[in-house]
Image (cartoon, rainbow, N blue to C red; front, top):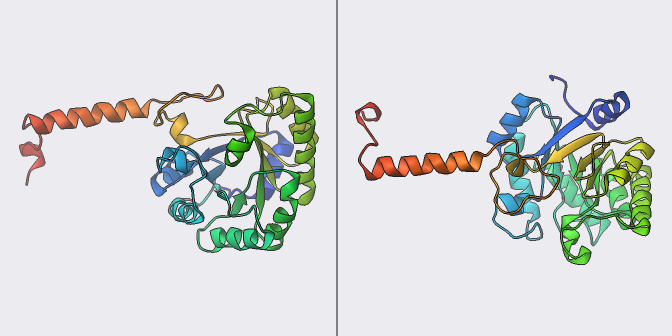
Length: 266
C-alpha cells in the first residue's frame, strides 16, 4: 500500500487482475481517511455540487470550485492517484481552453490527472490536454453533465444501437490515449464487453462486476447523503443517523445545563 499510484500502475493492476478501488474525495479530512485505507484513486468529482454545495445537479460547479477542493484533498494525499473532474463548460467549447484549464488544475490545484465526459466528439479536446502533458481519464454511459440531453439520470446503452455507440466510443477513447475509463449506469453485460475489449482499465459505477475497478460517491457510500439511492449504491455506514443523534444529544445537554460540566471547564 506504500507505492504511489500512477496511470501506469493502474494498467498493471488491470493486467494482473487486481481490482482498482476508487472513491470521490473533496477535502483534507476525507483524503486522510482514503490515505490510511490505501484507496487507489481519489476523484475530486463535480458531484461535490450535489453532496457539498447543495446544488440540484453538477452543472453549476465551476473550475474554481474544483481547484479549491483539489487543493484541499492534495494536502493529505501521497498515495492515491488524485484525479480532478473537468466541470461543465470548462472543456467542451475549445480544445486549447480545455488544455489551459486542465493544466491549471494540475499546476494550481495539485491534480495528477483530469477526468472529462463524452465520446468521439471529445477526441480533439483530449488530444490537446494530452499535448499539455496532463493524463486524461474518460467517462462514458450516464454522463451527469449531459443530464438534460439524456433526459435525466437513466441507464444508458440498453438498446443495441446505443450499446454499439458506447462500445465504439470506448475504443476511440482508448486509441486517443486516455489511461482509464469510468463507465456509469450501463448494463452489466455491456460493461463486461467494454472491459474485455480494452487494454486500459475500466472503473464502474453501476456498470456491473466485470469492470477493472469500482467507484462510489463517498458521501453516498457512508450514508451521509439524503434522498433516493440508485440501484447500484451500497451504503456501508449510516453516518448521517449517527451525526444527527450526536447533535441532538449535544443540544439537550446544552438546553439542560449538562454541558459544559466541571470536567469540561477550566
